[in-house]
Every structure is written in C-alpha cells, then in structure tokens.
Image (cartoon, rainbow, N blue to C red; front, side, top):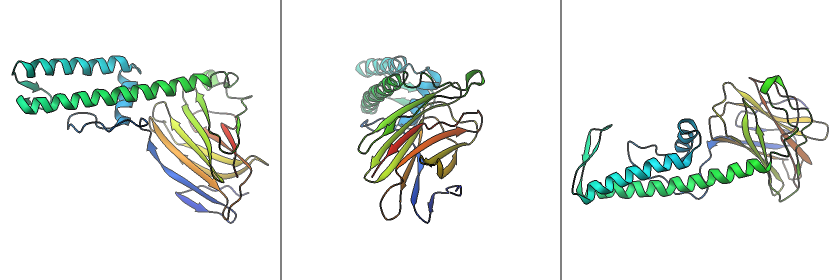
Length: 257
C-alpha cells in the first residue's frame, strides 16, 4: 500500500482515517482553576510547572499555596491590607475575603490534579515489567524484543514507553468498529518532529503517517476505521522520533470489529 501523509483528514479508497488535533491532557474530573489574572489558569500549565520547577513534587508545591493561604487569612482577620507585589495591588476587606476563597478553590483543584498524577505514575509502574526488555535510547541502544500487547474488542490497554529522550504513554481501545490510539507526551517538549505510524499488522502495511511535535502533557488521538464498516483486523502503532533511533516495534496493537 502506498504511504500516505495525513493532513487533518484523508479519505482512502477503502478506509476512513481521522486525526484529532492534539490537545493538552487535563486532570480527570477536576474543576477549573479560579480565574485570577496573575495565576497560572489551566491544568496543563500547573502540571508543567510542578514537573519543571518542583521536579514533580506536588506536596511541596501545594504546601506553598497553603502557606500563602495562611498569611492571607491572618491579614484578613487582623483587618490588615495584603499587597500583591508582582501587580502592585493592595487588597483588604471583602476583596481580600474573595481572594481567600479563590486560594481555597485553587488548593482543592491542585489536590485533585496531584491525585490524578499519582494514578498515572502508578499505571506507569504496572508496565515496567512489560517493558523490561525494551532497551531505550540511552547509550545508543534501541528496542529489539518488545512485543506490544494485543487488545481485543471492548478492552483498553495502556503502554508506557520511557527513555532518556522519549517519555510517552500509548493507549489503545475500541469504539465500536473503530480503533482509537491516544498518545500522551509525559516528558519535555519534543526537540523536533516525530512520526506517528499506524499499520495493518497483517503484512505490516502502512495505513497512516503523521508528523507532529508534541509539548509536555500534550495528547494526539487517531481513529482508524474502514469506510462502510468492517475493520482492518489487528492494527498497530509505532512512534518514531526523528532525534533518536528506535528499532521498529509496535508500541500497541488492537483488534476491533
């Protein structure tokens, strides 16, 4: 089969393949952060901050907000004025009380995000044994013997691919007769474009290829289905970064329909 580079949505003579624009992963079921002009206002920015500035230490990050809350409460109880130095603002009375409410709301959301990250980390640990034979790019080694688990209908499988220069999570699941692959970048922003390749496992025939550059916590979702129903049988996904060599091996495989 002729290789095809997908730009958004491509219709093939025998198939329908779509690519969802990458979006940042947000904490499941966590409320939105309160809107305060000088605060980081999105889940993804907070997650990136904790990862970059606090080395993933959520307890330390949340503790700083709790200390800040304590200082604001003391000022409010004393009828004093709080100064936001970065903005040159002075707040007191009802305005300060509303600010304290926003801090409490933010801490609640931060604890929710912290819990989600702990669940994700636990999930990664579950897959450590499965990727024990998966040699990473460190030292110039490339994967040789890794066999991605094959997922049957109505099952969801998550695989962690971790290395010095690539840290991603690949989820494979079925939506009726469609195969869905979701890639989440858990590491730093990719230094260059990487290729997302999806194959029909029988014959290793390429169904789609997409070149993307993913930021921290960014997600890309692929949907694979045949036009007019049916399926390709087992399909597999392989992520090929342009900045480090990886030997061909399916990162996840799934059978739907």
